Length: 111
Length: 116
Image (tube, rainbow over all chains, first blue to last red; front, side, top):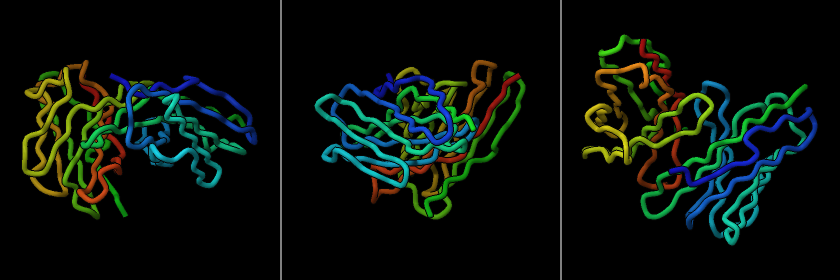
């Protein structure tokens, strides 16, 4: 079963705008990660945030984690057309660190 | 570093035949490899976890006799789709991780399987 649920399912914005995607999950986690997938391609790891962290930055990416609400958000600032892709959150739980993926958000950045 | 390759990148086969997909870790030893499938416009679903030298652990609902997984070395795992049917058409993605960083999985580029 899917652990993570992203919203929105699809997001369309103009270049230069910020994009925010949210992810919710159901059980306690070790880490939460965000991945990007261009159409028909493999996954690109974006950022990992540990359960004891609340916020993390990487370039134009900002991730927050609220373990009390079991939710995370990914903010992409100053978006570019090249950011057009599907974005997935993935959580790992327990000692085996298996990843469970959310349903993803399809982001379209219009030039 | 941490590159994972898959071969082939795409394959078309006839219904009833078997197809083998390879997943290789190119620059690290992968004690564990994972196999996922992804239907169009959907998320990744974990099919099975394979540890080097031992039998794969399959997720609920995944037929182990249909999806044969072998992880014979620390750099290679294979997924064989046996007696493929059109409903097996999907995007298959593998990932690999080392024993030192359990929370990091490195993903292959995926294999598009089309069964006609």
